[in-house]
Length: 473
Image (tube, rainbow, N blue to C red; front, side):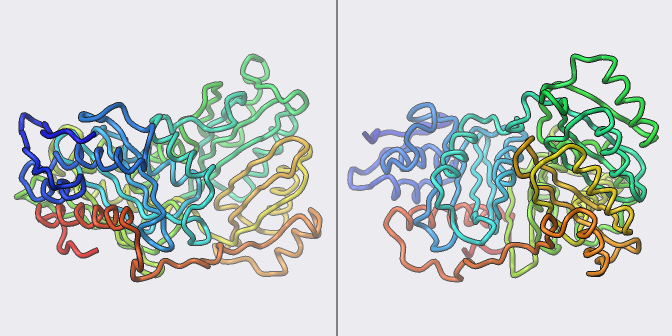
């Protein structure tokens, strides 16, 4: 099973017969040609059957995904080993973020044409992943390298809206769609710096069919929405790459970052001797923070070569070693300031507020009624996540503030409840972290020990390159 000679970049390694694959991995990680590590890691995976069926062969493997629950008692280790490809880090993070998983710690490291990403992942309760369906979905989606499609939206028409935000705007949009007999099956709405961007997936209210083959109806929708927005509308029958990724693109194109607050959470330094720019982010931790940062860097055509992510209580610390896609680091103060502004905007776009969840059987004009109740009672919608199917229970989440941008009073919320039904609206808090990750790894099996040390080796390599200050795990 184990080849006697491993080849990579025209380098040959003669293995003593007494060494197993993991020992070879340790030796190779301490050689200058550490890209060989990826090939040996593939052999480790092959022998342990951790990732059977994921990859394309023996040496020269292009892609492997390892998901292991034996390493840490309260976190799942997700390791992605692949041929380096611009945008692949974003795609991997996107898959995990779309499942609302928390990435509490991560390491990224690349050498030549190879890339390894290591993620410490928990669910919303802070527990390791135990649902085999979720684990299989992650493996299959990452292995297929097709995380972009929005599940369940193939037969819907996508509306992309952007314009100046104002009180009651979302209510007016949903009222127009209801009047034109359009049902909203899925929607993501963000507001930031006086701007509103939305991606809505709609269909005919009665038949549930897409409406992109009705030119007169589409023209009517565009005309009426443009009058409301005084901005841009776009209608397409093609599946949007990813709604939240698309919102970042739309707001970036709208230049919302030019009005962003001072980038207090972001700093950038030049690592002259290595030819990298070092981006450091320190801010309050929140869901999907890593996705927002990596998405923005990727859309700005910067490549992440190395990086580390960790959280300490409610604080996040992220460090990225980047170059532009043309191979150069950030070269001017103007470029540096622009990148910091854009990253600060990415951090701030997910507007915060009181989280209100509407759970009720989907019915015609439901969203119009709910958002009208918000408007009439002085609530401003900062962000919305809508998911519904006709005749089934709709899950609609709104983040709202009062007119001054503060948390609404209980009297305001009760007034909305009376308007839409007392049993439909609940004030929800973030999920409690009932399985906080232990400080010490504890007892591990042999396989777990190997993969835990693997994460340490990645950190050690970053430290040896002078890219991080400490290689402690």
